[in-house]
Structure formats: structure tokens, C-alpha cells
Amino acid sequence: MPHSSRRPRKPYHPKRIVSETEDGWSRVEHTAPTRYGSKPVVTSSLPAVDRSLTVQKLLDEHSRCKQQWIESEARRWLQQLLARQMPEGGWSLNKAVCVALGSPSLSWANRVRSVWQLIMFMDLVDMVRPNLKHADVLKLYAQEPRFTSLDKDFLQSLGVAVLEPPQAEELADESALIFIPCLEWLLELPFMLVAVKSQLYVSSSMHWIIDEAERSRNRLSADTKSDTSMLEQCDNAIVAAKAILDTHHQNKMPEADFADGHSLALTIYTLKHEQED
Ligand SMILES: C[S@@+](CC[C@H](N)C(=O)[O-])C[C@H]1O[C@@H](n2cnc3c(N)ncnc32)[C@H](O)[C@@H]1O
Image (cartoon, rainbow, N blue to C red; front, side, top):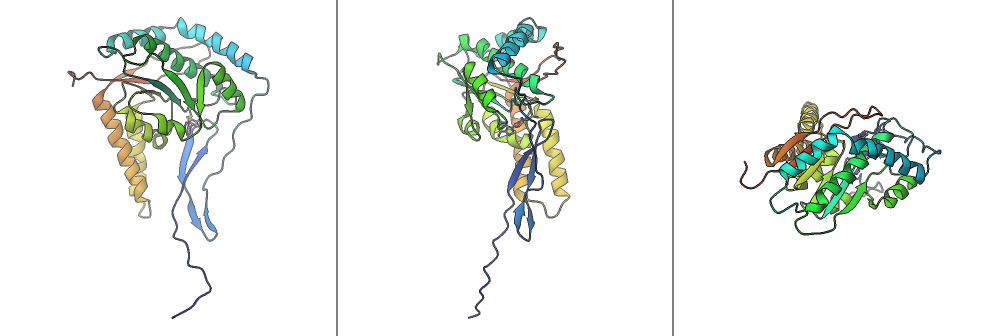
């Protein structure tokens, strides 16, 4: 029997690498095999924490932006929409999960956008809360790998429990209000799979997700060495996004011109009632 002291080579399994770009997007790549094993294709660094900030300053900023939000046309639009599309007997929701908020305290261009999105998330919950079908509590959660300890203290002071990935993926179910203000489609996929049955799902746009997943699919199909599991993920995302479009009303928030000049255009997906098609 031939004998060799050389250890058999381990089969190569590509791993998913999620890295961050400066503008807050997550880049999802796969490891590449090298002589020494696999190594990430992309490395990344996060912007520094804005050291001038404190929980109190974030709370003051939150109150200032909230005042503008309360007086806005966009908020009136949201109130009217929820009143029109509330299911008979009220909302069957028992938790609210915010995913991919970004960090309110890192020194990056979109810091204040995260504060605005948090205000919208919390206000949406306040609008739904008086009309819940079963539960009288609707607990708030937020998951964002970029949260600093200052962000976590800020959120906790507002009554929002912080989750560490993948706790949100595990917690989200059809009784969750899911709020995702911009996430890379592959990372949004686990949430889309449950959002199909959720009565209230806020996201960027299912059409955008379909376009992005189709683009990735075309790129992967052109590469003979591409990973078939990634192709499957593209297909799953396309199917899930189309299912959400079938089962939900799509309500595009009007572009709001807030003083800080931040675009907050989101799409509110409300589950169609049984008698609707
Ligand atoms: C494009 S940024 C959006 C940030 C902010 N919502 C905005 O609109 O400016 C996407 C965010 O998703 C976050 N992210 C990536 N993976 C995540 C995960 N598994 N759960 C929650 N957030 C995640 C990233 O850290 C990043 O801040």
C-alpha cells in the first residue's frame, strides 16, 4: 500500500466574506483559494467614532430631527397609509426589528441618516401599537454590526434592544414588523423569506433587489468557475422579492426634503387582505 507522509489536501470550500465600504454598503465576496488556504478578497476599515458625541448629544439630535419628522408631509402620508391598510381587527405583530440602520455615531457621511431612520422606525411602531390585534407590547430591536458602544447606549436609552448578528435573522418571523433601510440583497434574503407573510415590511425596493440579484446571476452565469450555491441564492432572492410583490401592496414613500438634505425614500409593503388579490 503506498505510504505518504504528506497530509491529504483539504477540499476547498469558499466562504462568504462580508466587508464594509466607506459609504456604508456591505460588499459580499467569496474567499479565493491560494497555496496557503483561502483568504479574503477584500479587507476593510470602518470610519472612526465621532469623539465629540455623547448619548445626550445623540438624544438632542434625535429630538431635533423628530420634531421635523412629526411636522412633515411624509409622516402624514405614512399615518394615512397605515389607517387605510390596517388589517381588520388590527395588526398581528408582536415585535419590531430594525436591520442595517448604520451607525449614528461613526464619522461618516450617512451618520444623520441613521438617526432619521431610527426616528421613522420608532414612530412607525408608535403608530401601529394602539391597533395591535393580540399583544399589547411591541418590543423594539435593532441589529447593525457597525454599532459602537455609544450607539448601543443611545439605543438602549430609547428602549431599543440591540441584537448581535445573526440574532435578528433568528428572531424575525411573520409576526415581526421588519424595517430594513438599505441592505445588500444577499444579506436581506433571510428577512425576505419571512417578510412574505409579515403584515408590515419596510425595505428599499423589491424591484431594486430583483435587478441586483439578476445582475449578479448574469455575472455568475458567465463565469464557468462560479459557485452554484451563489446562483441558487440569486434565484432565491428573485423568487422571494417577486413573492413579496404578489402578497403585498407596494407603497413608495414620497421623497421627503428634510433640513439635513437626507433622502429617506423607503418602500412600505403591507400584506394584502385575504379577499384582495
Ligand atoms: C448601505 S448601509 C445602510 C446604512 C443606513 N441604513 C443608510 O441608509 O445610510 C448597509 C448597512 O448594513 C449593515 N449590515 C450588514 N450586515 C448586516 C446584518 N447582518 N445585520 C444588520 N445590518 C447589517 C452594514 O453594517 C451597513 O451599515
